[in-house]
Image (tube, rainbow over all chains, first blue to last red; front, side, top):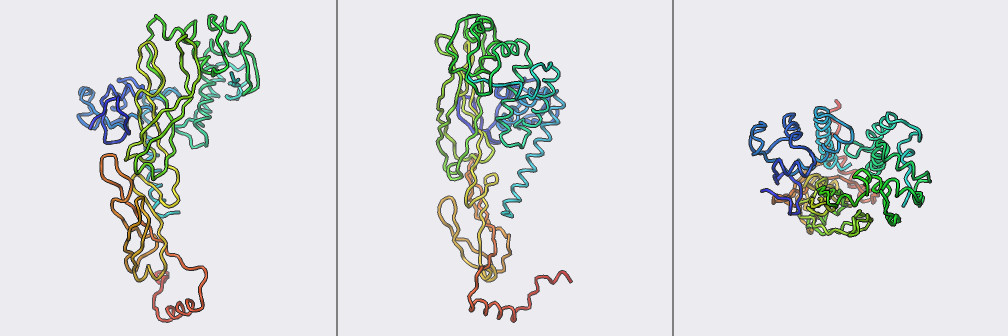
Length: 110
Length: 313
């Protein structure tokens, strides 16, 4: 399933967007996205993660949310891309842990 | 126009130099950045802080701001009469419904303020994206729902003047949404300039706490109290779901905290299918026992060889 920018959509794992659309929606430069893919922060869902095949890259629509956050962090903290990649990796990790914590709390119903 | 004290927001002196302002901003950004912060009202605070920094770090904007004079935060004010002439190249407009920050950020575009944006220079600029948070009921996201999002936006009217107006955007939250997801509504952000596309509206979905259900992803958790004898002997109990009651079987010799899965009674998933509902058993004892109940418990105590603390040795 794929989306163009004219329909109202939930940005979920199930939808896919191309590199240009990710760049437009997030405000990141395509080159910055390529570098963040190289850092392993963004992962194309289909095709190879090699920059040579970037024209075939598809990203889950949730990556738009991550991309917008990346652009904000980069601008607001004046980060370079390696610092940004590190911050994003930690934030993602914290979110996974928070989700896990919430799931365990639900089970214990504290 | 309402005054904002950018120096006070950053906690610096009016005479502070660029370096001091940058340091103050960095410290506050770390504290309040909504992507990082757990502080209450982080988003609001960060917006103030970044506005203040945006103006004070730019020598021209800072000068324009300082020349407006100093007032109390929130105080209604008008810049001095020659301010317009000096910083916007003339053309007084009604300043009542203007936002201080928007007025100042327009200055960077060039003399003549906002008029230059739509002008013959052909400066093509996409509209700004907006982000809002919608607080929704669990029942509403389960069915899908419509939402009216009120937004205060700045629009350039036909005569090139900037105005603040409130408009309402109708948004459909489709089935399948849950906590923390984002909905993109194309073209409902700020208007583009010079033929640039309109911005998009992003709606962050936050679920309001529910009296009965807790939500994690698309699964629901429900605390189900059972009597000691129901847990011991097993029972058929009625529990609520988002669409009516269902009957679940509590197996004999159930433990507190045991989860019973009710398949497909969670929230609908965006790709089709549904999450599950988990009934989490809580064993509750009556706070007041009748004489007869006490008697029966004593009898059970006598008859049972069960030692719950046997593993202590």
